[in-house]
Structure formats: C-alpha cells, structure tokens
Amino acid sequence: MAMEHENISEEAVIELDGVTKSFGTQKVLDGVNLHVKRGEIMVVMGGSGCGKSTLLNHMIGALTPDSGSVKLFGRDYATMTDEELAETRMRFGILFQSGALISSLTIGENVALPLREHKSLDDNIIDIMVKIKLELVGLREHADKMPAQLSGGMKKRAGLARAVALDPQILFYDEPSAGLDPVTSAQIDQLIIALTRKLHVTSVVVTHEMDSAFTIADRMCMLDLGKVMRIGSRKEFEDLRDAADGELKSEQDLLIRQFLRGGAEGPITDRQQSSGYADDLSLVATRTQ
Amino acid sequence: MADAQEKTKQSWIISFVGGIGALVLTASQQFFSTIGGMFLLLYEAALVTLRGLFLPGAKIGREALWFQMIRVGVRAIPIIVLVELAIGMILPLQMFPKLNEFGQGDQIATVNAIAAFRELGPLMTAVVLSGFAGASIAAEIGTMVTNEEIKALQAMALNPVSFLVVPRMLATMLMMVVLTIFADLVMVGGGWLTGMRLGVDPDVYYQLSVTAVDIAGFITGLVKAAIFGVLISLIACYLGLSVKEWEGSNGVGQATTNTVVYSIVAIIGADAVFTVIFYAYGLF
Ligand SMILES: Nc1ncnc2c1ncn2[C@@H]1O[C@H](COP(=O)(O)OP(=O)(O)OP(=O)(O)O)[C@@H](O)[C@H]1O
Ligand SMILES: [Mg+2]
Image (tube, rainbow over all chains, first blue to last red):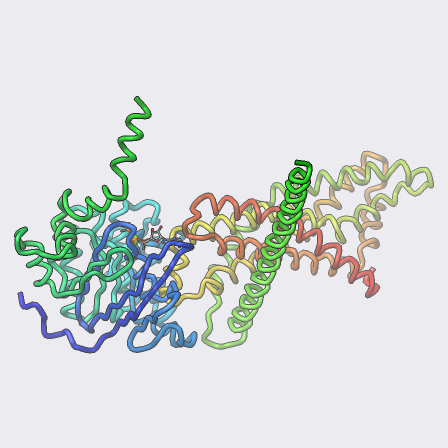
C-alpha cells in the first residue's frame, strides 16, 4: 500500500507545540510537539501511564497545558470564545478509553444525543441515523439496552457509534481495540480506515496493539517519559521493527524496537532493572524467608 | 540544659499554634472557594434557565424535568407522611395540658396549623429531601464524573449545567413546593386525629386551623420551601461535579455524605435568615 494516500494534505489540522503538563510534581507531558495532517491516521504509542490519554485530553480541550499551545483547525483553545469552542467540538468525535456512555440513557439514546441536541431533525430521521450508526459497529439489536448491560467491548463500540454520530472531521480513539476479540478488532481497524479514506476524516489513534497499529497507521508517534521520542511514517517504523541487532546504533532505536516487537528484553527492561526494581524484589524475598 | 528545654517547649508551642493557624487558613480558604463556586454555578444555572424560558429555539427539556421530578419526589412521599403525621400528632399532645389549664384546649389546632405551615412543613420536607434528592443527585453526578461522562458531554459540546444541573434544580424546587403543601396538610391531619382523642370537636378543630393560616403564612412557607429546594440541589450538583476523576467511588461517597450534612446546615441557616426577614417585613 502506498505510504501516503491521495487524501492527505500538507495542512495540519491538529497542532501541538511545546505542550507541557504536570499533575502535582509528576511531569506527564514535557514539551510535546505533534502536528497531524488533514486526512491521515496518526497512531500514538507508548507504555502504559506514559501520558497518551492525557495527550488526547489536551487535543479535545478537556485539559489546558501548563505551557505550550494546542490548535485545532488553526484555532488555539486558549483564545477560543465559547461559541468557537462549541463549534470546534461539534467537528470532532472522541472514543474514550472507557467508552464514557451516559449511564442513564440507553445505547440508542446515547448515539441520538448529539443529533437531538445539535441538529433540528425529525425524531424518525434521528431513529434511522441511530440505526445506521449502530449497524456500523454491529450493535443494532442492542439499541434498547442500558450501558451497564453491555460488555466492555460492546461499550467501546457503542462509544464509537456515538463519536461518529455528527459525521466529524476529526476522530480521536483511545485504545479502540483493547479488550475486543480479534475479529471485531480487525473490523474496527477497517472501519477506521474506511472513515478516513472515504470521508476524509483525520484520525488520532492511541493503541497498544501493534498489529492494529501497523494496519491502520499513515504515520506513527512514540511517546516516552513525557516526550515525543520519534515521529515517522509507518514504513520507517516497520523498518525499525524488522531491523537486525547490528543495524541499530542508538539506544532510542533499540527501545522503540523492543516496544514494537513486544520483547521482554531490551532497554525498557534495563531501565526498570536500573531503577532497583529487581533488588527490591530480592530484598522482599529474603525478608519473607 | 534548661535553656535547651525552654527552646523545645517554645518551638512546640509555636508549631502547635502555627499548625492550628494553617488548619484554619486552609479550612476557611476551602470554605470560601466552595461558597464562591456554588454562587457561580447558581448564576450559570439561572442564566441557562432564563435563556431556556425566553429565547426561542433554546430547548428546556420538559421530559427531563418531568423525569427528575418523579425521581426526586415520589420515593420521599412515604417518609414525609410518616414524619409529618408523627409530629402532627405529638405536638398538640404536648401543648394540650398547658392550654387546657387556661381553658383553651381547642387552641392546639391553631398552634399545630401555624407550626405546620410556617415552619415544620417546609423544614421537615427539606430535611427528608436532602437525604432522598440531595444524596442521590450528588452520587449520580459524582459517578458520572468518575466515568468520564461529564467530559464526554463537554466533548460533544453539551453543557453539563443545562443538561444536568438545571433540570435537577428546577425539579427539586418544584417538588419541594408540592411536597410541602402535602406535608402541611398531613401534619394538620395528624393534629386533627389527636384532637379527636382529646375531645376537641372535629368541626371546631377544622375551623380553627383554617383561620390560623392566613395567606401570608401559607405563601411564606412555600417561598421557604422553594429556597430550600434550590439550596439542596445546588449543593448536591456542586459537590457532585467537584468529584475528581481519580477519586473514584471514595470521592463519590464523600460528596454524598457532605451533601446531606451541608444541606441540613444550609437549610437551618436559611430558615433563620428568612424568618427574620419575614418578621421584619411584618409578614406574620
Ligand atoms: N487528573 C490526573 N491527576 C493526577 N494524575 C494524573 C491525572 N491524569 C493522569 N494522571 C497521571 O498521568 C500519567 C499518565 O496518565 P495517562 O492516563 O495519560 O496514561 P496513558 O498513557 O493513557 O496510560 P494507559 O495506556 O494505561 O491508558 C499517569 O501516571 C497518571 O497517574
Ligand atoms: Mg490511557
């Protein structure tokens, strides 16, 4: 497949510049620079707890950076008026890590919610649109269930149906395929690709699943210790993954390769050992003896 | 030696006093930021409500309002009946011997009716609702925060104030008024039952009750009820929304407990303030 398909334009729709964020004394994001082009699928990777969800929360304007700027469609969140903010929010959809369905509404009502509140449409038209969106994620028979009655994977798919309800121009996905079976996960991947190619949607996908990442990505971005360690095309990351030991010189490359391959040995493991984790463990072991 | 002892004693006192000072400072800071936050929320809710009432096109969810009224009010009815009936029966019983000494035994009807409509109807209803409505609203909204539902609403460009807070505040306010009228009547009914046992003529009892409650007494009682309703729902919504995502069920539990405690304090405080105001304006 061609690395860059024809829909990608050079214009950046999401621009993060020098975004820094601390929670208490913990610096979660440390000068993150990331530009996402219109029409591309950007996959964001990184270890658990490295700040991926925090990054997404900045992109949707739910968190404000301590320093740096976040722009969507060329507009900075910091300077938006309430109207501009509402307008911007109607132009993107987000699938939260937990689904974040409104628990007092049925699945169908959840998907209908943005349509009902933002569009003046007839009830039966809304019903049809809800059915279409739910069919897309294979949940049409479950429209009348409450979120608590769904499995984790089903909640996620319902969240996706809601995220696409207003036909957004940008879609954010926080671990769309975590907790899904391989077939559904592959279907979600295809859905992300289809939305991007056919409807020119720009997508930012946070994921741990390397198969899925390499299937959907146009470009990839690796986060580590609050910084962007590498941004590159899928091809670059594929080469890195498949590289033999001798070809990689820098520690960084080795670290990324370990992550991409999911190996138990490498710089990431060394880092944990050097932080004294193994010593602590053996200490605990001798104490309990 | 003695010098060193003196020093440690001094530093102990200083750190003790300093500690209390710091505690008072943070507590008062928290107190004022909470009060300020509640006022801001009230202001925004009022704006949204006015816009919903007067601007064409702005929606005010009637369905949501109706649903919340049922939720807030209906479950509380049995408890309100129980409480008001009991007070309505007890109060006249306690008043009767003294009044009877002066040959005014029938006047238990007047005492009971005034107490019901002016004070105990609105007050007890509010106390019951701060448990039923306040706690459940705080728990619900707090849970929504920890489930990222509030964040999701905002990401869909939906304002949690108009979507969640306003229907709950209006519903609590309206239900407070409706339930207070109901509670007033139940309490008078309770007194009527006691009166019969004590040999007060039922017709006389009824007549005395009707004359005791003038229109001012009736209205001021309902004004109080509406204000209590606003206070309960405002505190519940504010504390629910103040739960932090990472606090989880712990934070929700804290918000729920605090809602009941703060509500009762606020209700009693407001009751005192309004009684003074009504008295000053001669509404007695
Ligand atoms: N609101 C918050 N307050 C305090 N700390 C937070 C908050 N949100 C996140 N953190 C901390 O920031 C770090 C990054 O969290 P984040 O949720 O962004 O990780 P993540 O990369 O999405 O992890 P995962 O892959 O497990 O979802 C974590 O160490 C977390 O403890
Ligand atoms: Mg996450």
